[in-house]
Length: 210
Image (tube, rainbow, N blue to C red; front, top):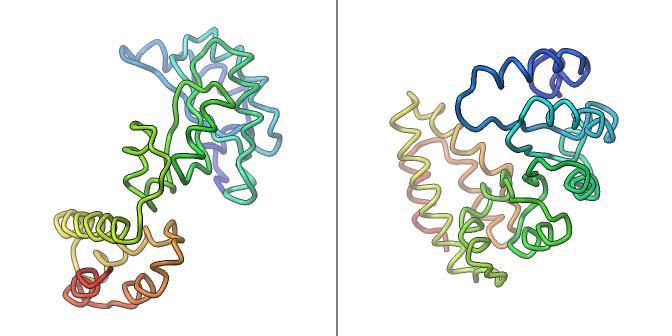
């Protein structure tokens, strides 16, 4: 949870947004978007902010329909998303709990949102973007998912080796994505990868993932 007046925490004092949003709009020459939760503790708070966003000239909203205090508990309430779409002319990007192409396409149809933002679902399944764009709802089989995970984690490891120093720091950064991966078919292999304490061992385990 954000306790300071940054990120979602600023929703504790929404009056500050009355100055902040127009000021940002005035100095941003390109597209100006606002990503936010539906409220700090009240999921209906978003509706009190829509007039400000409209008057300030916000180009689009990215809405995650949980409150800040909820963090990631429960389910994102996309009935709120649908109502926001109905009540504003600002394009709305729906965010929250999209884990499959079926869920994403249904969400677009049910809410009439202008698009989707993917977070944890895309970390767990990087091919989710492709299936949504192609409107392919069939889930990949085990061999395809294994190949995807090997490609994804190998690329992540290589990139983090360029950015960070020390095997423990590098592996710690890579392993952080496992919190979003809940495919039971690979639970045993991922458990082994989590236990790896050397990059070489991690690479060996990754190569054998199938």
